[in-house]
Length: 403
View 1 (tube, rainbow, N blue to C red):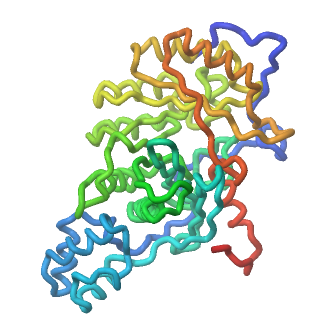
View 2: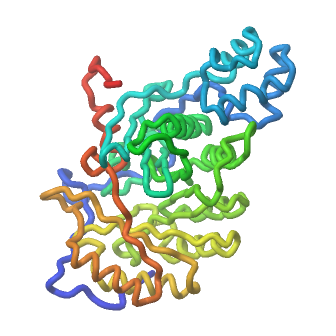
């Protein structure tokens, strides 16, 4: 068990994690079993290139027609058959009707940061709801993508975690979020004019490594060049996890050098057991060991995500302890991203004071840990993942979605 090296001063209280509005001691249930097991229709993005060609042959079409369809989808970012004029009309209708079913429907878009951020709510084929967030920064455009509808990790500070797990997304449902965001960026939907989607982070709704088959499939579609996929750089894709150790090792063995982000949020098991329920299965040390194995295998520096929560996990001694834990495993292998929590007045889940944040960061840097405070986006549009989707889910029956 990881133990603190320095006690919290009496002047700094220790707030314990809890579900607000619930009876003391109430906890969400950690689950890997989806409430809903609906299977989306088969889609082009679910299939390997040879499988797509096989479908074309089954339809009595030459195999190269599948490549043409794939190029329209992955390169031209369209699923509209009328735009595929290089395909004969009958072939495009057959192929598109078979391989490009409608998977997600736009429910609502909200803009923030002067139009540089767009948060989208999507309704899936079975009525489940997910979010994605498209963000323009100087030098890059990033999509935060969802991998599950809801989440079963039961973290008490997470809006998605309050919903529980509805179901896993398919590979194609994940890729569709990326394709639509790439088209929005290309067509000038973000402030600043047309741009290219360059980065994808699996930090939306859900625990990506609890849905490894679909997430790994989506990663392959993102990095493979057309007509197989979107041709993004693996270095610009980040897969996050709260610490599912066996799945981290599977990601290591995948052999695609994406960035691994470990959502740690506490360096001591005593607090993390309460804050991140999966810590009851794999402790801080085990999660960090798995992350270090990923670094050793790929050469890719690991991101340690740390949401700073006032009087709960932001004590300076925890910054020092985190530096010690990282340095035990070597130097230069991890980069810490402290994340200022979107402040909620009166809640136990609120942002650290600026001087407290600075002291926490100073301890990390004094320990030689590269540390960058995360630039948060979308605080004025229910920026925390799951908040906007929850509003849509809670609409009365018959309430009209906003396009």
